[in-house]
Image (cartoon, rainbow, N blue to C red; front, side, top):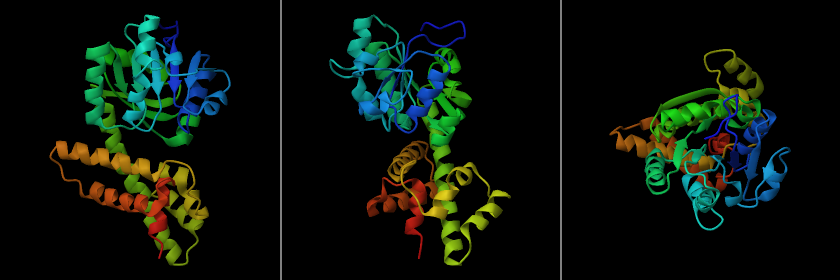
Length: 296
């Protein structure tokens, strides 16, 4: 991996310019790092000023490829075929490329994927899931939790710090995703607890805005309340972090817990609650929309 005098990689691409990927890309470009962009829906990449838009994943092949996609199969598809990264890395003579997975994926599956990529293709896979939401991405203060070879992660850290206020390495590939599983228990529980509190307040005829001001002034305050509290006041659950993605994450938590021989009753209850929300046809709503199923 070639780096500049500031320690930043000289060849970087970002694939997936959705709600999280776009602000990450803008932060990288703002630091004067040349960045190649690709998105399945091209106009989303084209809307980001200052980047070079690639016509295909192959056209985006770089020393470091960041992916900001919903799940591991989305990443795997980027590698395959004539328009895929593997063929393009080989054609360009990039012998030790680094593939960073910023999405939330199965710790078990990503560890197996990383081993295969290194063994079969010489590709180093880093799992680096993110926490902080779209606001954290826009403000450059994401928390990035990382698994992968430590020396590679140290080389990437200056790049991660362009959009993260916290960057922490935890071990081999898969460790970052395990930390994200821990994070998602807390996020899902906090979202659901606040939704229940708002449902109780509404059913009691209370002003939700005033109730939230009390919560924000005490031990019940949280980043979830700060970023998402207005959604319950406005009953506006469009966009944001979807319930179906929250359900996906809770499935990964169950997988890791089972492998560790743990029974996590709260995580199990959350899994059931979000399964009901998605089954009711609300999977594309923000996860705060779990409130809709709580109102009497």
